[in-house]
Amino acid sequence: MHIGLIGLGKMGFNMRERLRVKGLEVTGFDRNPDVSDVATVDELITALPTPRLIWVMVPSGAVTDSVITELSEKLEPGDLVIDGGNSRFTEDQKHGTQLGAKGIRFADCGVSGGVWGLQNGYGLMAGGAADDIAYALPVFDALRPEGERADSFVHVGDVGAGHYAKMVHNGIEYGLMQAYAEGYELLAAKDIVDDLPGTFRAWQKGTVVRSWLLDLMVKALEEDPGLESIDDYVEDSGEGRWTVEEAIANAVPAPAITAALFARFSSREDSSPAMKMVSALRHQFGGHATRPAK
Image 1 (cartoon, rainbow, N blue to C red):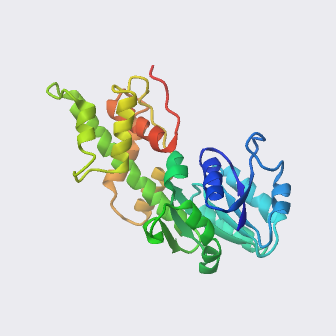
Image 2: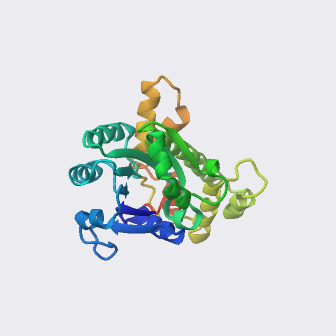
Image 3: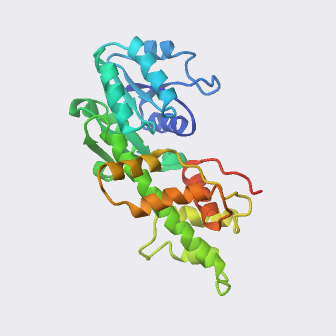
């Protein structure tokens, strides 16, 4: 299979490499000519066999809108566009309608794995018509980890369902990181605890709180035991807010996720060791920028 990939940033660049390693042909386009395979979107479209499959991996919002609009004007009926960024599910439904009016197929895919996806594979949550998801299965299989497909890939439902699932995934991620971070601050505050990094390391095997996030927490402490180089300001990408908004809209209580979101807001006001850890964890799994300590 030969696919097009638009967006070769932190995630897209590694995804292109993983797809190629798995035997797929990829033509990538990015505004940065140093990483792009072609100079324009027009050249990318010309390079692909029909029906074309183009995976869009650009920032959500205005950038995704502009790419989808350009593709709607240049692709042909029967081509398939997959939005693998972090778009809101309501945007997927809008884009699906926009492309569908031209006979162009559309699917969305939530992607989890961050900067480690090239090595470990990506968790994938897809939304779209069953035939479109089946057509793109070679791409999904190349991107996901080895093993049972159901352990790392799901066709969640119709257009928008994949990004809805990814939104909830990220909301859960907010809560998990906040719990680890608060535990870190509590241990750091007690004078009888002599080996803080060793405590978390001892939890990595056999305990009920073991996880990949815990492994990354240990890695962050090994690199900077006191997190002295990191400021406690923590960004939120938007998906935590969307999760809380959906919880309100559907009358679903989500106190842990909501509190974790609000804690990020509080990080922008006061110094907090816990929020230093949340910032460190976001950097470890996603390569998100941290602010230097003041």
